[in-house]
Image (cartoon, rainbow over all chains, first blue to last red; front, side, top):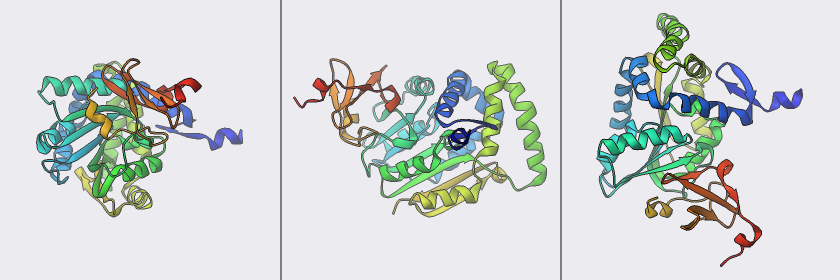
Length: 251
Length: 61
């Protein structure tokens, strides 16, 4: 009994064995991969595109940069970064989920993005890259699905160059009580219904809503980035804190 | 797989450099004794998906 208690973690609102979370999350994303882009547009009313654009604009990406897009899923950030870094730079799209990675690769190839983008299936907790490799690392709507977030932040710190920047774009906590109420209703009532209707999968979208509520709030995540060795950590709330963009520098 | 990737890829377990075995289409780490598959042109750098090298394979060539 006590062993079980020690070795569990949250999967949305459920407690599951640590070893199992990675498989449960994998099932969610295998299930949603094909409809992921359509659902993102629908669920957020297209606002996720603005959140991602703000991330790109505040990244400081330049031609020649090496950028790692973790949990890059279907490649929205990678596509823009590939244009910015040019042929002298490189973007690595990494995801633990092969379904997401393949949807992303096919989409980028269809859009003519090639030559400076690489694809790697990897776990954020133990990244398979040399120390001090990347100028910028982004993880957009990915960190909350990682089982050991502290290990993942340390791993990202290791593969960043000194002076390199980590950007975490993730759902967070809104402080506006009215908005919170509306957002909760939307997330727990409408969202699973939309998931059912469009992707025939209410469960996966219920997980997404629950995992957002379980994710550390702004100050907690900032503290976790400090502990992982980042400096100048800060965050910017977007859409009243429904989403927050955290940044930190590797000293 | 793009061979340029080998410049930055390491074994996620040992952090040692990898060799590309083109015959088996695997990325091999002698330090950790693991071989990572390349599927559909994408290196699968997950310990859970890696093959453990036989003791013969672990010997340096």
